[in-house]
Length: 295
Image 1 (cartoon, rainbow, N blue to C red):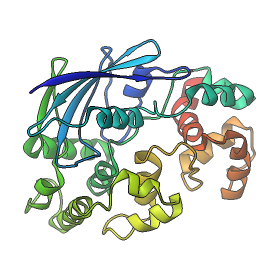
Image 2 (cartoon, one colour):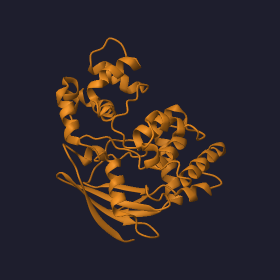
Image 3 (tube, rainbow, N blue to C red):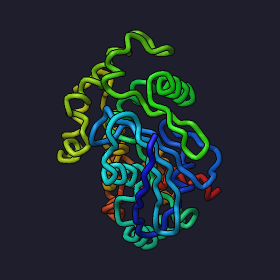
Image 4 (cartoon, helix red, strand yellow):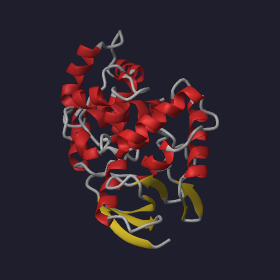
């Protein structure tokens, strides 16, 4: 497979290691060797797969892009997609300023100033994960996604390790069964594949909607209810300022860190989070991910 290189400029404190080791969705790395490895279906054409080696060099990310079968992917498009996945597509210097201005956020932010949320590769990827992980422990869902990708996705050798991309929508739509997944859940994957092929899961389309409208649109897919539609919108579209008020772990973190004698309800959380704009998503993820390190 041919390889090409490109770069992404990063603003503000940034740690690729923190992003790679965050542990989110199917990612569960326990060690970091200076390379973050990604394999995915591209935004521009979900039928095209690439593998990417990401390395940090100061305030720059160096990408080695491995093209899959077919014509080479749009290099700029791949770079934009990677930037979204590692949350390098927003003004990190402004995020740093907002965190430092709030005594509570400053304490958490100081644990890992370069922390940024890791995201799903695409709304398609997040929707598939939603079906695979429903009513299943995360470790089991990771194994199911890995086996599905190894059997039906393209494999890429990335810095000495082989990583497989999720199957393309056309491949997924043609699978009669998925070992380890109940037969009743397979049509849900087919519906996601069909929606992806029809353009309903395009990043640009969903980003053009309000977050609430995008969630309602996604809920038309079987198996994608309010919880998973919020997961797709908040953790796959690269939106940095969507506040999830229903996530219990985040509310518990706010209660502890802000010294409340009760768990905040949606209105209280929204009021506290006003000071976090325009990075309410990033702050919420940071509080949940980093607050355990304070103890």
